[in-house]
Length: 382
Image (cartoon, rainbow, N blue to C red; front, side, top):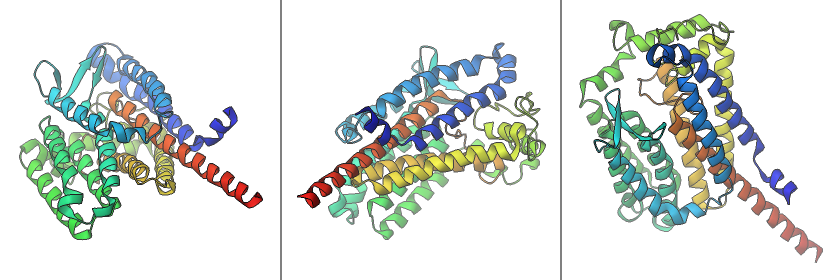
């Protein structure tokens, strides 16, 4: 029994995940200790909090990995209600915590919890459950496609009130991809894409600072001391690192040149200290996790399991693309963290929970396939 359990686990997925998460802890400390010493007079402030989250995340990962993924179908209504409730609570003064002009967090003891991170997996479970049950009439927009999108619209609106355009956009993109893989018609997808693009444009243009963020990446040197500063410092870090890097802990840009180097621009510090090889390691681990996720979703025979796996893969992939694009200046800065690497406990916890769900789908698929093979062998013998 024990042997069977070990054999059924997707060890490549699990080992790669924790290898990258462990690397992330090293880089959070390396990139944050100067910033922490200057701002809170404790060089270990961020790594201590990240280690607390990591310990919790490992425990939850092991627990979630043992929960049959089909169980989430029953919990889907409760999950989406709690998701909406958490997004409302974070906006209430005295409950929600404001940091850098954004009210996205709730204090829970020594930790800051970001509800929108939990909503990411909540909305994936909800959409996978609903669309897996609508396969017979998914080609009908009013009956099949639209009802869950009303809920997604509420989620989008509540997240924009925080405000958090990056997270809201990533949820919108994952939704569109899940609608596509559910089997919706192309004309429905094009219509939804146009509506989504219009919403994004309207919200992006509704505040000057958002317009500045979305346009400054094209020419950061036009305003090098304000909107362009973070990207310019990222360029300097990447150029300084070169092929092999300056060595672990030897970054110059983290010495208060690059603002908050331990968060969404941590990849710039990886590039400076470990060079191109460091970047290739990070992106290689992400690519392997995503590749395994696609395989798991493709091999799963349950529509719910397939959509759930694809949703997790899309969410992680979009975050990686947005983050790498921002650090390299190919995309606007959205404030989206690099999964498993950036400082941020809620993001780390939810990413590990998401991958734990992937691992459970994989194990159940392997077991089901083995049982079918055993039945086939018995039939051939008899």
